[in-house]
Image (cartoon, rainbow, N blue to C red; front, side, top):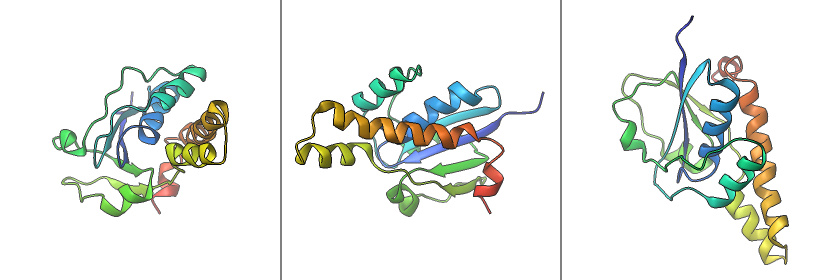
Length: 151
């Protein structure tokens, strides 16, 4: 069997989008991809992200928010930034890894905007569900799509 591709999802706080991406990748492609996630900061695991991933059958409740420095000793084939801020502040990795940016909206910011307009809890969670589903669609095409994104 071929060696697994080593992939890092990077976000600002490693609390929501990168955690969802890690969860989906383990669930859909764990046999072909060794996946990690981290942040340029750590914000703790977002409870709403855990909830909506659970609704989709993917348990990320055991994940931990990790700082990028915790993975210094690992080498990756691909580093995928999932938010603009992480892309802008992403360091150069020793030993490489192709950098790819696939930006997704920030569910907490979307939910806050909905709340300010009077949206209830379900409307706020819908923001998380929308991004969850977008991330799933991206992850479902892995690993084959990685080459196309890195060109």
